[in-house]
Length: 65
Image 1 (cartoon, rainbow, N blue to C red):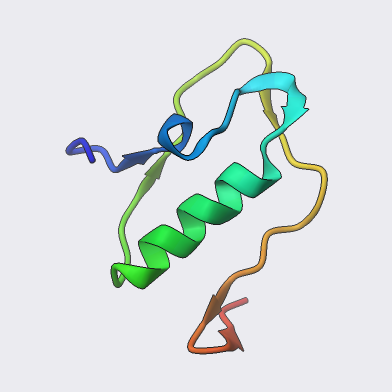
Image 2 (image 1 turned 90 degrees about the vertical axis):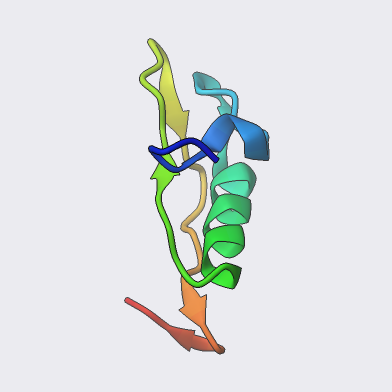
């Protein structure tokens, strides 16, 4: 973790706009939630991040949004 947060690339995201980054983003959300909160850093990439399915955001089995 940097002072900016947990880098999404450390969870397997490619950020090329082609590769589906959904699983990496979900893994980062789950990891940060287990730690009680924090920031996830999405560095700028030319291609952007591809999300092919919605993320699941739950705390103690209850949706947070």
